[in-house]
Amino acid sequence: MFNKMKWTAAMSVLAASMVFTACNEQDAKKDSLEAAKAAKSAEVAASAPSKSVVVYFSQTGATKKLAEIFTKAKNADAVELKLVKPYPSTYDSTVAAVGAERESKQWPALENAKVDIAKYDTVYLGYPIMFGSFAPPIYTFLDSNELSGKVVVPFCTYGSGGRKASAEELKTLEPNANVTLAFGISNKRITAENGAEVAAKEVEGFFADLETGKTDEMLLGGYSEQRPLTAEDSAVFAEATKDYAYLSLKPLSVSTQVVAGTNYLFVCEMKAFGGPATQTNVKIFKPLPGRGAAELIVVEK
Ligand SMILES: Cc1cc2nc3c(=O)[nH]c(=O)nc-3n(C[C@H](O)[C@H](O)[C@H](O)COP(=O)(O)O)c2cc1C
Image 1 (spheres, rainbow, N blue to C red):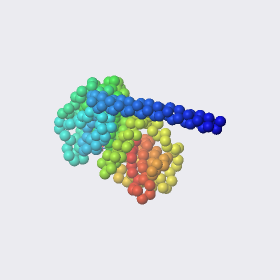
Image 2 (tube, rainbow, N blue to C red):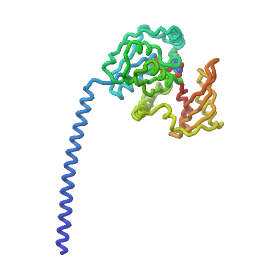
Image 3 (cartoon, rainbow, N blue to C red):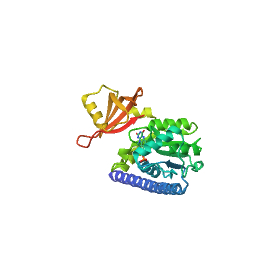
């Protein structure tokens, strides 16, 4: 009886181990088949013509740096728009030249205004913010190409902001294109020593937001309710905006989000010189104690 039981138990162990081995072999075969399939489709994807193109203008290199991150992340083709007559080399004279273009709405000629857009489904469109919206060479590009039916993903670099306003202007000018949520990063952050790394990480998060269909309103959803300012909040705001000289900003209330440091979302009264007061959101990041000063991320406009 005892022996029979032992034998039966031994047989069941043997049978189980045979089934297990067979399953393992089957799994291994399946895995290697899957790996071969994945390798094949990666090979096909790498050799297939890209369905997306990164088109960008960059005056001083910050947007170019960002465009390279987009190009690599999406395995896209890339076109850098080049001015026939480059802007002057100093900031003040570029401001004067761009101001004159905006005034006259005479957009600058480009060496390569016409891009073979028909080949692509998606256009990642990159620019520096100039005078609150995209740089004038982008108007020339829009005037020279047909973007109807295309997905247009705007991305920009800026001194303090302009991401949302520039995307809104694109939507108005290209009503038949699908203009998505826009990505933006400040010049200071992307040109910092670890700027490429910081931007690449944010771009990755941006693609995840795009995929889940996030809107600008939803991006603000992670913050708590706005509350009155404390003296500490006001000090953080003052520290982060001490070099900000463009518009008058007065913080009214704040909400915070604790990350590795603290994200602040200030609701501010904003006044352009001589203009009426409006409200805007100002994002500031304060690193953990001892890890640097509070940093202005964006004045959302
Ligand atoms: C003529 C001119 C106008 C600008 N206007 C704005 C502006 O309205 N808002 C802003 O946040 N930054 C503004 N900037 C700063 C640029 O957007 C910022 O430096 C950008 O990162 C430059 O990108 P680039 O290096 O690719 O040319 C302006 C810069 C210039 C030269």
